[in-house]
Length: 326
Image 1 (cartoon, rainbow, N blue to C red):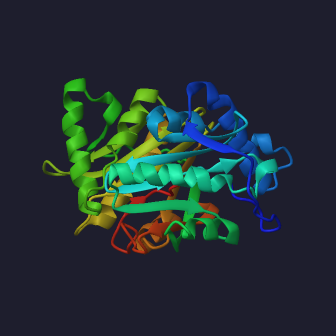
Image 2 (tube, rainbow, N blue to C red; image 1 turned 180 degrees about the vertical axis):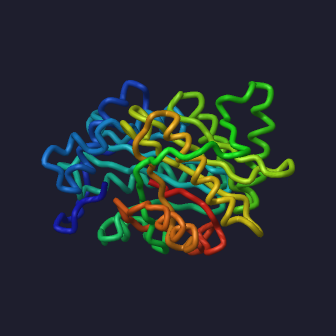
């Protein structure tokens, strides 16, 4: 979190940045909840996102890309970077509220920018509050530009019939998983050159926090994929299936493939006994957004994605992609 506009920026006491260690997880999680809960005006900020977990899941996915800032040896802030091949994004960046306005966020920004430089990502991004000039200005200083409103949407799960061609990554024999990852890489690379969700697919399975929906096409190509978090302890939270990333194979028929993918995600939620399906999309992907709204998805949270360089990446009208970079 970055300080409200009423705060004046000043230099903090000695700030040190280091990798987030397992022993830091409880403190980093507490700061994450209290920072967002305070900014959003929760009566009890500690209840923000309740049973969802953004800190432990992201640390477990790649401990080398998780950072904390300390003041006099005490953890006061954290930030996380994600490597999606040619695409990298970061967040949540959260600072203890009583230290807002002291420039601590800049130290954590430098850490994740070094991470991106080492990975060689071509397109970088983040999700932040569209109504906060403070957030937008901080990230603009690092070359990020606000481009698209992004709607984090949800709907009640209605169940639905089985979806032909649907399999789950977690149900595949171990010997078949490398081939499935290669097929996923081919699909995401067709959406945006070099885009890879292997990190998310493998981490979701390894942590037991969800599964990846795979939609087989008529030939050897995948028609779609969706990395889904399910239930408490994941980024979804209790009674929720959250589509962290989903994409339909581009080209003729992509809209129909996207509809099947949404069916398949809702089917997974129903099979897991979850009552709510959450999924976000950029309003730059106009038809994807319209189709989700027509299905009964309603926006619960709206933010802005910021991009470096100032280009759309895979957020263009012909892309049928679900994500929100939170």
